[in-house]
Image (cartoon, rainbow, N blue to C red):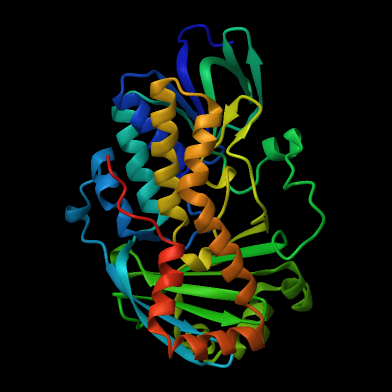
Length: 373
């Protein structure tokens, strides 16, 4: 066991929720240790669009967003598999930034505040003790008064804990594959586009450095139909949408191979496991086409930080979490079911073009309000 330092908080997972919580706790004078299985900076499968509700929050954490000259996104284009297009303004809007860039900036802030960060370290178990928690991570054993899980969409801890969503039978909500590229392409920087295809959808939006994030979600079934080949999946299935065909034929991929993640689940999750509170994707995921998962990670970290600092119970955190996110997640699951089917998607896109107020209501249901800090 590491007896040199006793921590107030151990954070397992160094994504947006974990890093934000670590920074908030360090700002409050807490001794924090954070574990991340990868080494910074690195790419993650993510749409890389952040709602402007998070702008002030990120500035509070220590980022000077104005100086970063990030693309501001105020327009939405949605296309059906047949190419029918819906265009709508994004009332709140957002901005684009890669996880490679953003996570590294947050890591630098956390380290300056005294957070001990263990990169390239996999946590095997979190055990509750009489004085708090003990974290077993590779060759390390570290103790802390409180432990938090912020380990993303699916981890070895989810499996070890036999969480309910892991043991669910195959459903329409838990058999997804995510793929992401950075590309060079001629596309409006103030617009995010969501192009649907059979059993999936693909987003494109600008990020820093005149690059674009291209990220899509589809089913394991689609990948299997393409012979488990990403290249065939894109040419035979995604490219049936004329907009996606144009992208794959004319964009320059900036990586030799995409980032890929499988076994993505949008099933309901609890915001804690036993006495361990969870944050970010570990506590629940919204459908990526709703474009708000990154802001939810920030907001969830703020809620959990408030509960930890006030000494409130886990039930209180769960109640706050439900109040903030339950409607958004429910709306996201409904939208998830509507999009992807070729017939219903085309019908929905055509219908929404005649009802802009309904379009804004759907956008509003999946977005929050300005995060107050």
